[in-house]
Image (tube, rainbow, N blue to C red; front, side):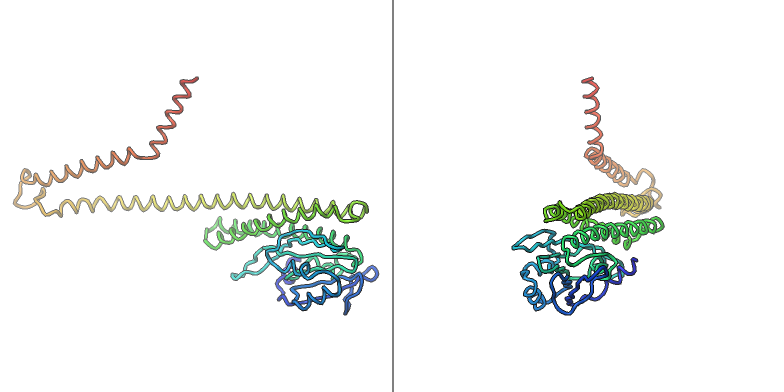
Length: 349
């Protein structure tokens, strides 16, 4: 199933307009020209194709081109007997590194008394199920068509969220063995995808709520059941997305702490090595000074007073600098403040 889904989404996108009409109980069949009660499926249409469909259907070109903007937000619009619903749909794309990238893409569902029109920049899996008959629809029932699509789109979000969760678990298991930058970047991409999904799902929810105002939804039991299923699936997708987003955020913070601890351990080891190397360096430096030092030929112990003077001055300056550094230590300052607060609390008690 996942392979079919990816194969459909990764297909090279070309401008395409298809006319489909439901006749009987089977899948909608393709027709050559526009007919009443048909479904017009538009994938990345050209300006000429948009103009032709607008003339056939009586729908304005602005509505038809609304979903051709990748940044278009989910919304509804009603104008002169034409109803338009723009929703965000999940999309899996192959990245430059060969990994799957999860994002969203707007899709417009428009209908009037003549037909149903769907417009998107790339092919949609739910619409493909409609066209192949996997999902039963009737092109003469636009409200049922839209409600069924909304339900399938919410389920597709849940499917994509499960794929993201599985991929996250796989990356985490790999990071337990060895922590590399590639895995961290993949987790960051998944975190960004969940942010896109969360924003799109919240926008779609507002569109779902306005479906109740569509004529026939509140009065027909079949439509009302579908509407309730859409609301339930949409809320479940939002809750699932928020859970996965919070888990991934905590996971990223935990890995950040692990990386920080590893860096601290490395710095600790380097500091120890530096201190160990400083001891012989210091001794060699003292005995390499251009002055009489103890043990030098021709000089007695008492003739090396300048050496001991330099040593004493070095020790004094070291103690003074160390005193001021410790005095300005923010950690000690914080500890003192905590002690003062605890003393005040004890006095108040």
